[in-house]
Amino acid sequence: MGRDENLNIVQNSPTWGAVVISSGFARILNCDIKSVSFSPLSIQGEKINLGDGATVEVENCHFHGSQKPCVLVQHNSTIYICNTKIEGSQTYGIWIQLASKCFIDKGCVITGNGGAGINIQNKCSLRIDGGPKKEVEISFNKDSGIEAVEQSNAYIENVVLKGNMSTSAIYSTQNSSVTIKNSQILSNQCGGL
Figure 1 (cartoon, rainbow, N blue to C red):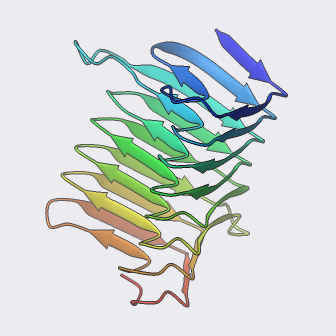
Figure 2: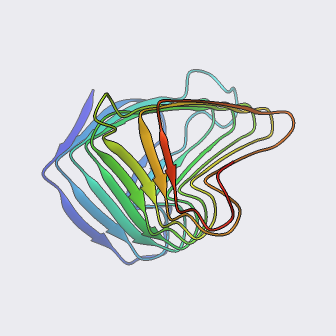
């Protein structure tokens, strides 16, 4: 098991990311990670066999400032995120792709990204539960708050989606699904859903 705790990283080099995880299990706690070019957190998974991929737990972290997504998860990998702020990417805050899973729990804020706050695509799943006090906020992203495309599924409960811009608070294509329960959808530029 890998464990990174209390890291303060500013990555300026043109590599795959500040923290790159290819397989196995990792826990990232109490870290502030900024990457100028590539993703602050990049979970690559198994590219060839599409085995179990990597599993990563993130808690009490801050990922920010990148030309690429702040958090990238792909190739049948799984991420659990709690009490974490994800902001300032020029693209997506979180990009989940290629049969991966993302679980977001209380205390998370995904804000101020140049694309959608969260994009899931190509047979992925997303589950967000902010708890009874709605302690997950997805706000002020320049595109949708959440996008589910290419046979992906999202379950969103107790979440605040506000101030998202271009498309809507939540965008889903015909072959994907989104379930929303007990959430607030406020002041998004182009409507709610």
